[in-house]
Structure formats: structure tokens, C-alpha cells
Length: 342
Image (cartoon, rainbow, N blue to C red; front, side):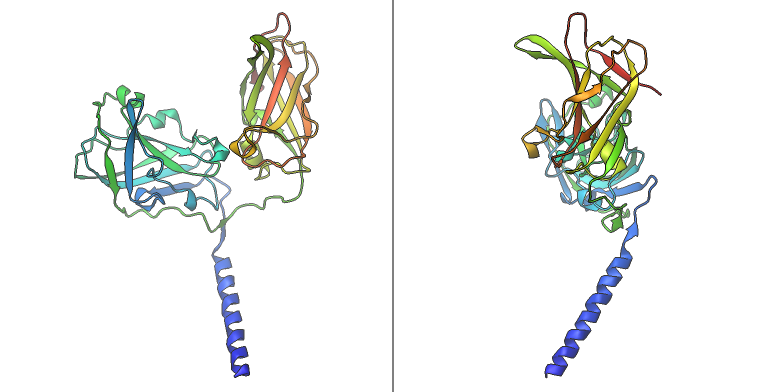
């Protein structure tokens, strides 16, 4: 009996090993170039029904019912330049002039609302007109204008400014739309393998212009008086595109920007690496040497300047990362605009 059990155990181990090996073979490398994501509304993890709610005069799909494809994109997150091909087939319980919508990321990493397609696409009719009880179907294709941070959801609207511009009749009702399966196969990247993310500290140099080509330095007041001019800029995308992760303890991060200012600035520009998300109660400094000089030389309007400094990370980012730059206020200085050098 003992020998038989050992034999069964050995066969089970071999079967498990072969199964694991088989599963490992199924993984494939994520493409480095642009991808097309095919999404069928009926495959959404939110289910096959979308309800709507009133929001200051217009109607939008409820968050819990808006088509959500986040679980399908975990292996390879959609990036700027990728294509999203929406396939839909549904039935509404009321007449509608049509539906418009946005492809968005509602994750903490995206500050809970990041539209990843153009505003023009958001204000373009996706489908309609719709007759109550009759099947409507079709496809619509978007090109992403920014990277998805974590989630991918489709929010739908009507009665908003885009609907008014399209000349749609105002509808004072909230529909329920039930989705049916189309012939489309929803893209699933969960088995894809992206490039290996460095687990150990690294030294990385990032060009701020890759995230912000125009920087508005706005007035910051204290007790009614202007004390400084500054800007806080999210740079999640810079890390995602370079090392594939947010900064960790031990990283050395150099951030530079070359461009021109529309104002003379005589005081140094200082900088800090920070995170501003709910995970850190909206503020955490990430570098031991924060508030160092980013540009120490006086800046002349219209002349090219370079800002650069290296941060020594002593606190790991959780859901986001940004750089804050500022210069002190003094008589004669104002809010400057920086434009990157092409």
C-alpha cells in the first residue's frame, strides 16, 4: 500500500509539473509596439447591464455598472497610441437620441478620473438613435492619448454639453441598457509578460518635457499675500515608460527640463519629489534631499534655461509620484510659463 501511495504521489507530482510547464508555455511576451484592444460590453466584469443616474442636469452611467475591463489588461496595460475597438449590442428600456462616452482610468494611480482618449472623441456619438425594446449594435474605435495607469472603464453620457452641441433632444429619464454578446473576442493580456521591472534601486534620468511640455507656475498665497510661484506635476508616466515601476527606497532620480520662460526669474527654482494620493493622506515627501535647487542661475525671458537635480529616494511611492517646483515671490516677478525646447 505504501509503495502504491508513493507511486500515486509521484505521478501527481509529474502531472503537476507538466501542468505548470504547460501553463508557463502559454505566456507570451507583450508587444513593444502599439496594440489594438478589442472590448465587448457583454464581457465587462461589471455585468451585462448598465444603469444611469442624474448628475447636475446630465445623465451618466453609474460607476458600478459602467463597462469595466480592468481584469483583462493586467498583463499589458494600454498605452498612448494604442487602439481601443468597442463592440456593443444592447437593448434600452427607453428611447434615446444617442450615447457618448469616455474611456477612462478610475484607479488611485490616475487620481480616480483620467480620460485616456481625446475630448473630441468623448463628444462624438458612439451609438444612436436608440428605440426602446429594439436591439442596437455596432463598433467604435478610439486611439489612446495617454497611458492607462491601472483600470480601464467606459463611462457613458447624454444631456451633457457634447449632446447639446450635437443637437440632441433632452431626455429627463435614466435608462437601463442590457448588453448581448457580439461575435467579438475581448482582448485578454493577463497571460502576457512585460519587461522585467527592476526590484533593486536604480539610477534613472527623466526628461520632464516628456510629461509636461508647458508648465504654468501659479501664484501661491499665505494669509492673502503671494509667497511663491509653483507647479506640481504628476510624473507617473515617466517612471512607467522608463523603469516600469514607481520609485523605491535607494533610487536616484534625475529630472531635467530644457525650455524658455516668458518672465525673468532672479531667484533659484527649487524642487521636491512627492506623492499626493489617498494612500499617503494626500502628501508625502519621497526624497531625503527635497527642496534642493533645480535651477540656480537667473532666467531671462525668451532665453533657453535648464533645470535639473537628482533626488535620493528614501520613501517608496505607493500609488503616485510627482515633482513640485517653485520660486520665491519678490517685487517685479510674476507667474511664469515654461515651454520646452524642441
